[in-house]
Image 1 (cartoon, chains in turn blue, green):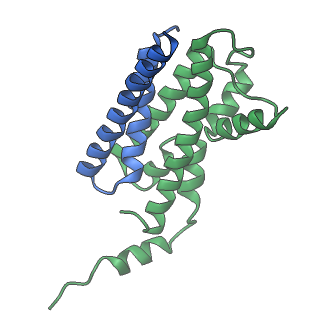
Image 2 (cartoon, one colour; image 1 turned 180 degrees about the horizontal axis):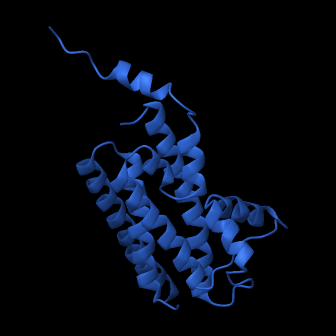
Length: 58
Length: 135
């Protein structure tokens, strides 16, 4: 299996965020919100650092 | 008359049986600790997430750490061991690429290690539910 790097990031973020959401909060709505928050942070930070590395490498 | 708070019920529940059973079951089989506590949806989501992450790591030809030659390998073995039976069965079956040759295989190695670490978090969560520290 050879997913693209971005797809690998999305899968990693999805599974890790699911576990973080369930284990770090008490009620289902808060679990969902925290999981979504972690997912956005994972993917957002990857996009930001990718651009930073792209600009450094130029 | 005021109703009795839930604390005594939780305390009596937590004093029955072997307190570490959800922790050990959750470590050996992802989600099993939550299943024992009848948290079916949480257990299913945890099991699907952790097993999928581990399986994807193997599918990407990720490496299973088998021996600790240096400190990084030791950390890798510790992370892999977190997956419990998944790790032992995969090792017994000879799965996982030994030398990492591609970038995706390196990602796969990280997927496997992180699946183990997430499984430890999930098992500790099951233990906290069992002891009444979390609802």
